[in-house]
Length: 212
Image 1 (tube, rainbow, N blue to C red):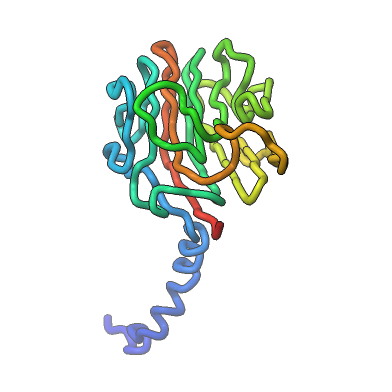
Image 2 (cartoon, rainbow, N blue to C red):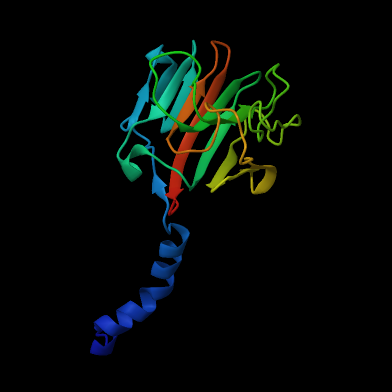
């Protein structure tokens, strides 16, 4: 059977595929993946490097304290205004965190930046969705053993943390803040391996850098 030549024209093919192309462009507009799903390229663990591994397309944080810093090339490795989306799953009794506006250090808990808490059943009363030790959340919005979406939005002096699309914490940093190590500036991201009993998985880590 022969088809009319009109069906092979570039114009008609463009029209037929336009809706799909537009949808794809819209869904990924401005978002950049920071984790390739294969290895830790673009990421650097400080102490206890074996606590940070990749398995089956996921970052697995499990073992003695370690912090996995983003040291890749996206946005020069430094972010001021941004949106960050992560898919996370905690195991029972586990603790972790996502730091932002921080910088690489060889050991210890990060000295700079803010921490978006990741904790659904760990003994620490500060739960997922809170801005650790700044504006805490005491009721876990997610469950262990299930993937949840964490959305961190920073614009100017404002921070918003969302879990599965629901706003959990909003915080505006005061102009007269006297806390030099914990204040909005610019910096990189960091994932926390908290302790040997905590096991947390991360995947699909993507950022949309702002204009700031």
